[in-house]
Length: 313
Image 1 (tube, rainbow, N blue to C red):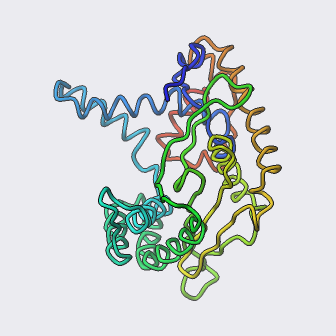
Image 2: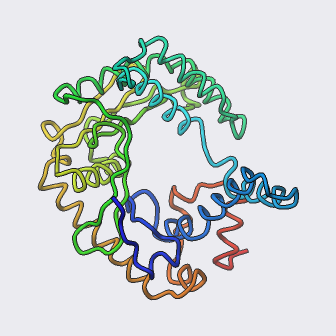
């Protein structure tokens, strides 16, 4: 479905709202109006046969400053695990899926390809590779339980539509059957443990700060998918846990409606800022970053770029 983007939003490269708890407003606007366009242009330049050597050199410099080194073993482990669960659970065009061992190996190879950003991240990668098969096994079991009533298993898709009272579409991407997400949990480094590692813990409820971020994500699925009941599957090397409206009040209609109203209120403020600013400098001058927030744990080159924009370096 083609959606109209208002001129006052499109002029800033802002084409869709997203989970308001995923990052602060300043980071959201910086990413969509400055960082992502530069990264997209750089990749386009590198793939364009007509680009000059100078153009490609400048493009690589942009990627070095704003793209490289921003991932982590945690993120790549989650992506690789989803690759494995997709291959195990989602039928191909012939209706076939891979056996668990073969699907798991594909994910392992994907994670092996990741280049850690430092020695600690390298240690995590090695640990996660050891845990990978068990995490995938539990993820598959959890997803099968969560999707037991679905006639057809679908993978990640984009849901994008306008929420009531907003002019700019809301954009979200559920991992499975248009309403659910997989969250992987990995062991963490611990100086108090004899092994140097602490096993991952699965949440008992969705009341924690990070789990509430996931509830807000599910609220987007719910609002853009006919209010079908969402689910969250958490998987670790030792177990899995499935949250649905039956066992999690935070995934029930009344709670999700309150979350959506909070989301709409947040997005309305963002739209007012987009309307007020005539250019990117004005736009970013209307917001202030919370540098202490987790979303700002970025590479030094990325932070240098951001702080230069807000005249802090």
